[in-house]
Image 1 (cartoon, helix red, strand yellow):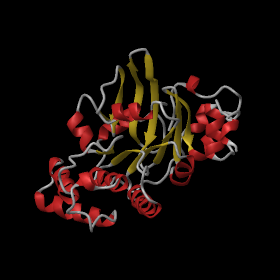
Image 2 (cartoon, helix red, strand yellow):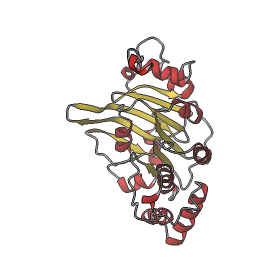
Image 3 (cartoon, rainbow, N blue to C red):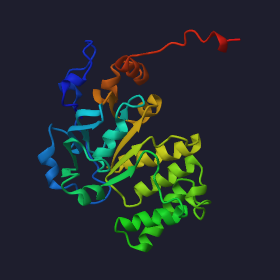
Length: 298
Protein backbone atom coordinates (compact mmCIF):
# COMPACT_ATOMS: atom_id res chain seq x y z
CA UNK A 1 0.00 0.00 0.00
CA UNK A 2 1.52 3.28 -1.13
CA UNK A 3 0.91 6.96 -0.60
CA UNK A 4 1.64 8.22 -4.10
CA UNK A 5 2.72 11.74 -3.26
CA UNK A 6 6.03 11.40 -1.46
CA UNK A 7 5.72 15.01 -0.30
CA UNK A 8 3.20 13.72 2.23
CA UNK A 9 5.94 11.82 4.01
CA UNK A 10 7.93 13.49 6.80
CA UNK A 11 11.20 15.05 5.76
CA UNK A 12 13.08 14.55 8.99
CA UNK A 13 15.26 11.73 7.65
CA UNK A 14 13.34 9.11 9.63
CA UNK A 15 10.87 8.00 6.97
CA UNK A 16 11.12 4.70 5.16
CA UNK A 17 11.97 5.02 1.44
CA UNK A 18 8.83 4.88 -0.67
CA UNK A 19 9.84 1.70 -2.46
CA UNK A 20 9.93 -0.09 0.91
CA UNK A 21 6.37 0.90 1.73
CA UNK A 22 4.91 -1.59 -0.73
CA UNK A 23 3.32 -4.64 0.89
CA UNK A 24 4.97 -8.02 0.71
CA UNK A 25 2.97 -10.41 -1.51
CA UNK A 26 0.94 -12.79 0.62
CA UNK A 27 -1.24 -15.77 -0.17
CA UNK A 28 -4.87 -14.67 -0.43
CA UNK A 29 -7.77 -16.87 0.61
CA UNK A 30 -10.19 -15.23 -1.81
CA UNK A 31 -13.05 -12.80 -1.26
CA UNK A 32 -15.83 -13.46 1.21
CA UNK A 33 -18.44 -13.89 -1.50
CA UNK A 34 -18.11 -13.83 -5.29
CA UNK A 35 -15.12 -12.88 -7.38
CA UNK A 36 -13.20 -9.62 -7.70
CA UNK A 37 -13.85 -8.05 -11.11
CA UNK A 38 -11.05 -8.64 -13.61
CA UNK A 39 -10.73 -4.87 -13.96
CA UNK A 40 -8.95 -4.74 -10.60
CA UNK A 41 -5.73 -5.81 -12.34
CA UNK A 42 -6.01 -2.76 -14.56
CA UNK A 43 -5.86 -0.49 -11.54
CA UNK A 44 -3.13 -2.34 -9.58
CA UNK A 45 0.03 -0.25 -9.31
CA UNK A 46 2.51 -2.75 -7.94
CA UNK A 47 3.29 -6.44 -7.89
CA UNK A 48 1.66 -8.06 -4.88
CA UNK A 49 -1.86 -8.36 -3.53
CA UNK A 50 -4.52 -6.73 -5.74
CA UNK A 51 -5.86 -3.37 -4.61
CA UNK A 52 -9.19 -3.34 -2.78
CA UNK A 53 -9.53 0.45 -2.64
CA UNK A 54 -7.53 2.63 -5.02
CA UNK A 55 -7.70 6.33 -4.11
CA UNK A 56 -6.30 8.75 -6.69
CA UNK A 57 -6.00 12.46 -6.04
CA UNK A 58 -9.12 12.89 -3.90
CA UNK A 59 -9.75 16.44 -2.69
CA UNK A 60 -12.55 18.19 -0.81
CA UNK A 61 -12.71 21.85 0.16
CA UNK A 62 -15.28 23.38 2.52
CA UNK A 63 -15.18 27.15 2.19
CA UNK A 64 -11.57 28.13 2.83
CA UNK A 65 -10.70 24.82 4.51
CA UNK A 66 -8.99 22.01 2.60
CA UNK A 67 -10.49 18.99 4.36
CA UNK A 68 -8.70 16.53 2.05
CA UNK A 69 -5.96 17.68 -0.30
CA UNK A 70 -5.02 15.53 -3.31
CA UNK A 71 -4.76 12.26 -1.39
CA UNK A 72 -3.68 9.09 -3.20
CA UNK A 73 -3.59 5.76 -1.42
CA UNK A 74 -3.77 2.08 -2.36
CA UNK A 75 -5.26 -0.38 0.14
CA UNK A 76 -4.37 -4.03 -0.57
CA UNK A 77 -7.04 -6.68 -0.80
CA UNK A 78 -7.13 -8.85 2.33
CA UNK A 79 -5.55 -6.24 4.59
CA UNK A 80 -6.67 -4.93 7.97
CA UNK A 81 -5.96 -1.27 7.36
CA UNK A 82 -5.94 1.53 9.93
CA UNK A 83 -6.51 5.18 9.04
CA UNK A 84 -5.36 7.30 11.95
CA UNK A 85 -5.12 10.98 12.70
CA UNK A 86 -6.19 13.63 15.21
CA UNK A 87 -9.67 15.11 15.21
CA UNK A 88 -10.15 17.19 12.07
CA UNK A 89 -7.42 15.36 10.13
CA UNK A 90 -9.77 14.55 7.24
CA UNK A 91 -10.33 10.84 7.93
CA UNK A 92 -14.13 10.92 7.86
CA UNK A 93 -14.21 13.19 4.82
CA UNK A 94 -11.86 10.87 2.93
CA UNK A 95 -13.88 7.76 3.80
CA UNK A 96 -17.15 9.52 2.93
CA UNK A 97 -15.81 10.22 -0.57
CA UNK A 98 -14.42 6.70 -0.98
CA UNK A 99 -17.78 5.13 -0.08
CA UNK A 100 -19.84 7.41 -2.31
CA UNK A 101 -21.52 9.41 0.46
CA UNK A 102 -19.73 12.67 -0.37
CA UNK A 103 -18.95 14.03 -3.83
CA UNK A 104 -15.23 14.89 -4.21
CA UNK A 105 -14.10 18.15 -5.75
CA UNK A 106 -11.53 16.18 -7.73
CA UNK A 107 -10.05 12.70 -7.94
CA UNK A 108 -11.41 9.18 -8.24
CA UNK A 109 -11.74 6.09 -6.06
CA UNK A 110 -11.95 2.50 -7.30
CA UNK A 111 -13.60 -0.26 -5.30
CA UNK A 112 -12.07 -3.52 -6.53
CA UNK A 113 -11.46 -1.79 -9.84
CA UNK A 114 -14.93 -0.20 -10.08
CA UNK A 115 -15.21 3.60 -10.09
CA UNK A 116 -17.44 4.52 -7.12
CA UNK A 117 -18.97 7.44 -9.04
CA UNK A 118 -19.20 5.95 -12.55
CA UNK A 119 -20.74 2.67 -11.37
CA UNK A 120 -22.05 3.38 -7.85
CA UNK A 121 -24.49 0.48 -7.64
CA UNK A 122 -21.85 -2.13 -8.50
CA UNK A 123 -19.21 -0.50 -6.29
CA UNK A 124 -21.47 -0.04 -3.25
CA UNK A 125 -22.64 -3.66 -3.44
CA UNK A 126 -19.08 -4.64 -2.48
CA UNK A 127 -18.96 -2.25 0.49
CA UNK A 128 -20.18 -2.53 4.04
CA UNK A 129 -20.08 0.89 5.68
CA UNK A 130 -20.31 1.98 9.30
CA UNK A 131 -20.42 5.77 8.90
CA UNK A 132 -19.66 8.50 11.38
CA UNK A 133 -22.75 9.33 13.43
CA UNK A 134 -24.65 6.01 13.05
CA UNK A 135 -27.45 7.42 10.87
CA UNK A 136 -30.12 4.72 11.20
CA UNK A 137 -33.88 4.20 10.99
CA UNK A 138 -34.11 4.17 14.77
CA UNK A 139 -37.89 3.72 15.00
CA UNK A 140 -37.43 0.11 13.88
CA UNK A 141 -36.40 -2.76 16.12
CA UNK A 142 -32.80 -3.87 15.87
CA UNK A 143 -33.55 -7.16 14.12
CA UNK A 144 -36.08 -5.55 11.78
CA UNK A 145 -33.55 -2.85 10.83
CA UNK A 146 -30.82 -5.34 9.95
CA UNK A 147 -33.35 -7.43 7.99
CA UNK A 148 -34.53 -4.34 6.12
CA UNK A 149 -30.98 -3.34 5.19
CA UNK A 150 -30.33 -6.85 3.93
CA UNK A 151 -33.41 -6.67 1.71
CA UNK A 152 -32.30 -3.27 0.40
CA UNK A 153 -29.12 -5.05 -0.73
CA UNK A 154 -31.17 -7.59 -2.67
CA UNK A 155 -31.48 -10.45 -0.19
CA UNK A 156 -34.79 -12.31 -0.04
CA UNK A 157 -36.69 -11.85 3.20
CA UNK A 158 -35.96 -15.31 4.63
CA UNK A 159 -32.21 -14.97 4.03
CA UNK A 160 -32.16 -11.42 5.41
CA UNK A 161 -34.00 -12.51 8.57
CA UNK A 162 -31.69 -15.46 9.10
CA UNK A 163 -28.57 -13.35 8.70
CA UNK A 164 -30.00 -10.60 10.91
CA UNK A 165 -30.68 -13.07 13.73
CA UNK A 166 -27.19 -14.59 13.41
CA UNK A 167 -25.54 -11.17 13.47
CA UNK A 168 -27.59 -9.95 16.43
CA UNK A 169 -26.52 -13.06 18.34
CA UNK A 170 -22.86 -12.72 17.32
CA UNK A 171 -22.82 -9.11 18.50
CA UNK A 172 -24.55 -9.84 21.82
CA UNK A 173 -27.81 -8.15 20.85
CA UNK A 174 -30.03 -11.24 20.78
CA UNK A 175 -31.95 -10.17 23.90
CA UNK A 176 -32.63 -6.66 22.58
CA UNK A 177 -33.54 -7.47 18.98
CA UNK A 178 -37.20 -6.56 19.51
CA UNK A 179 -36.42 -3.17 21.07
CA UNK A 180 -36.48 0.00 19.00
CA UNK A 181 -33.02 1.21 18.03
CA UNK A 182 -33.98 4.64 19.45
CA UNK A 183 -33.92 2.99 22.90
CA UNK A 184 -30.45 1.49 22.43
CA UNK A 185 -27.39 2.78 24.21
CA UNK A 186 -24.60 4.31 22.13
CA UNK A 187 -22.64 1.09 22.24
CA UNK A 188 -25.64 -1.02 21.21
CA UNK A 189 -26.38 1.40 18.37
CA UNK A 190 -22.79 1.05 17.16
CA UNK A 191 -23.13 -2.74 17.15
CA UNK A 192 -26.44 -2.81 15.26
CA UNK A 193 -24.93 -0.41 12.71
CA UNK A 194 -22.06 -2.89 12.27
CA UNK A 195 -24.62 -5.68 11.74
CA UNK A 196 -26.22 -3.56 9.00
CA UNK A 197 -22.80 -3.17 7.35
CA UNK A 198 -22.21 -6.94 7.39
CA UNK A 199 -25.61 -8.40 6.49
CA UNK A 200 -25.07 -8.51 2.71
CA UNK A 201 -21.63 -10.20 3.02
CA UNK A 202 -19.58 -7.36 1.51
CA UNK A 203 -16.00 -7.79 0.28
CA UNK A 204 -14.80 -4.60 1.98
CA UNK A 205 -15.76 -3.08 5.34
CA UNK A 206 -15.23 0.66 5.90
CA UNK A 207 -15.65 1.43 9.59
CA UNK A 208 -15.49 4.91 11.12
CA UNK A 209 -14.61 4.58 14.84
CA UNK A 210 -16.25 1.14 15.29
CA UNK A 211 -15.18 0.80 18.93
CA UNK A 212 -16.37 4.20 20.13
CA UNK A 213 -18.71 3.86 23.16
CA UNK A 214 -18.45 0.04 23.02
CA UNK A 215 -17.74 -1.79 26.29
CA UNK A 216 -14.58 -3.96 26.53
CA UNK A 217 -16.39 -7.30 26.29
CA UNK A 218 -18.34 -6.23 23.21
CA UNK A 219 -15.19 -4.74 21.70
CA UNK A 220 -13.42 -8.08 22.05
CA UNK A 221 -16.30 -9.78 20.22
CA UNK A 222 -16.14 -7.21 17.41
CA UNK A 223 -12.38 -7.65 17.07
CA UNK A 224 -12.84 -11.43 16.76
CA UNK A 225 -15.55 -10.98 14.14
CA UNK A 226 -13.44 -8.55 12.10
CA UNK A 227 -10.36 -10.76 12.29
CA UNK A 228 -12.43 -13.68 11.01
CA UNK A 229 -13.68 -11.50 8.15
CA UNK A 230 -10.11 -10.66 7.11
CA UNK A 231 -8.94 -14.26 7.49
CA UNK A 232 -11.72 -15.27 5.07
CA UNK A 233 -10.33 -12.86 2.45
CA UNK A 234 -12.21 -9.67 3.27
CA UNK A 235 -10.67 -6.22 3.64
CA UNK A 236 -11.27 -3.92 6.62
CA UNK A 237 -10.54 -0.18 6.68
CA UNK A 238 -10.80 1.15 10.20
CA UNK A 239 -10.66 4.84 11.10
CA UNK A 240 -9.55 5.60 14.63
CA UNK A 241 -7.46 7.86 16.80
CA UNK A 242 -6.77 5.13 19.36
CA UNK A 243 -3.27 4.02 18.45
CA UNK A 244 -3.22 0.97 20.70
CA UNK A 245 -6.30 -0.50 19.00
CA UNK A 246 -4.88 0.10 15.53
CA UNK A 247 -1.45 -1.30 16.40
CA UNK A 248 -2.96 -4.53 17.75
CA UNK A 249 -5.44 -5.06 14.91
CA UNK A 250 -4.04 -3.59 11.72
CA UNK A 251 -1.33 -4.91 9.42
CA UNK A 252 -1.29 -1.67 7.37
CA UNK A 253 -1.75 1.92 8.45
CA UNK A 254 -1.81 5.47 7.09
CA UNK A 255 -1.36 8.60 9.21
CA UNK A 256 -3.35 11.70 8.22
CA UNK A 257 -3.21 15.31 9.37
CA UNK A 258 -4.61 18.50 7.86
CA UNK A 259 -6.07 16.57 4.92
CA UNK A 260 -2.74 15.00 3.94
CA UNK A 261 -1.23 11.51 4.25
CA UNK A 262 2.00 11.85 6.22
CA UNK A 263 3.09 8.21 6.11
CA UNK A 264 1.67 4.92 4.86
CA UNK A 265 2.77 1.31 4.73
CA UNK A 266 2.71 -1.78 6.88
CA UNK A 267 2.16 -1.00 10.55
CA UNK A 268 5.76 -1.96 11.34
CA UNK A 269 7.14 0.24 8.56
CA UNK A 270 5.15 3.28 9.64
CA UNK A 271 6.00 2.73 13.33
CA UNK A 272 9.69 2.70 12.30
CA UNK A 273 10.94 0.90 15.40
CA UNK A 274 8.74 2.85 17.82
CA UNK A 275 5.31 2.18 19.24
CA UNK A 276 2.66 3.45 16.85
CA UNK A 277 1.63 6.02 19.45
CA UNK A 278 5.17 7.40 19.65
CA UNK A 279 5.52 7.48 15.88
CA UNK A 280 2.14 9.16 15.54
CA UNK A 281 3.14 11.94 17.93
CA UNK A 282 6.44 12.36 16.09
CA UNK A 283 4.68 12.72 12.74
CA UNK A 284 1.85 14.95 13.94
CA UNK A 285 3.91 17.17 16.26
CA UNK A 286 2.28 19.95 18.24
CA UNK A 287 2.53 18.12 21.56
CA UNK A 288 1.11 20.25 24.35
CA UNK A 289 2.00 20.38 28.03
CA UNK A 290 -0.28 21.19 30.94
CA UNK A 291 1.50 24.34 32.03
CA UNK A 292 -0.19 26.89 34.20
CA UNK A 293 -3.66 25.95 35.48
CA UNK A 294 -2.36 26.24 39.05
CA UNK A 295 -5.93 26.69 40.24
CA UNK A 296 -6.61 23.03 39.37
CA UNK A 297 -3.82 21.78 41.64
CA UNK A 298 -5.08 22.46 45.11
